[in-house]
Length: 202
Image (cartoon, rainbow, N blue to C red; front, side, top):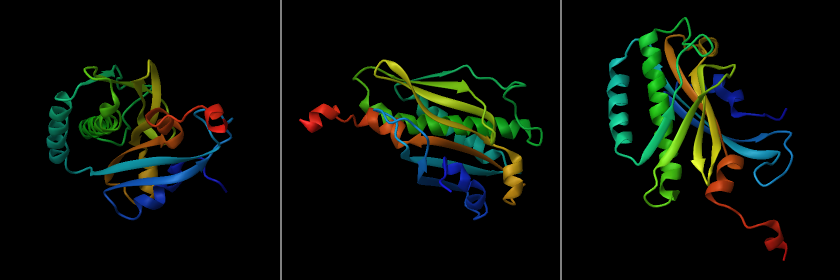
């Protein structure tokens, strides 16, 4: 069976005991072919593991990442909140869940700046926007967009992994965040635009 997303490999990867990982693989969708869509493309997924018993390290790391981001020409639009429609999970300690969510956001803002910051027009800060979302395997969940060539470009979905997924993998004493949908069909046409097909034919 052809996979439609790399999340199909989450449980087996968690079972390997890694504290962080990236998966890059080909995925298949029923997409109409156009300038930014194709039925086959590569998708990247990543995760970070945090023991539920230790909050000190992640707090220190969050403070360091926040300071680094504040020095970047970057505008982050984030009006998301924790609510009944996008909650922390009831089995998670709220303080630790908050820190894991912060680390997710700091990590992805840093990644997006590395990908797109050098491509911005000189003197213009990069704009990133966070939006509340729903995904069946994470809570809270978010989508992330970047302002690119005069429009908002959807980059990825992310969130704190549902505890039942971790329990299935034998990781009940840990919290994870995960992101996916960083795909060749979304990013490459914008960072590395191809000439029109007519130019290639002619």
